[in-house]
Length: 84
Image (cartoon, rainbow, N blue to C red; front, side, top):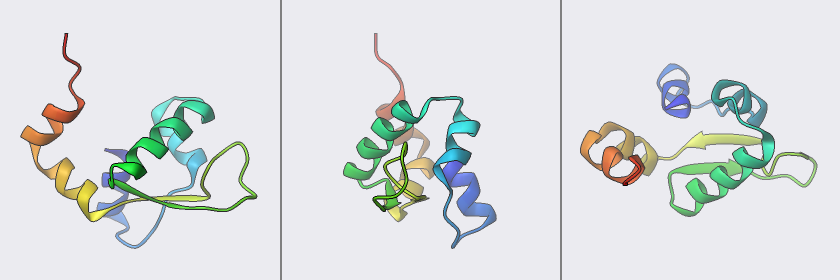
């Protein structure tokens, strides 16, 4: 949701990984793992650079597919509500 809110406020702007770490309260390793999953799913776009340790990307933006997912409450709940 953080990327979605950022997109709504600044449609053409990307976020830096450190901003997501702070917003989500996770460590860089957890952020990296989740970003790779979200990218492979087509929900985010990563700006890659070899000079961004400890992060895997220098910039992050929600994709059109990610926006569609966030705006579809049923699909979002289906994909991201833990079953158990």
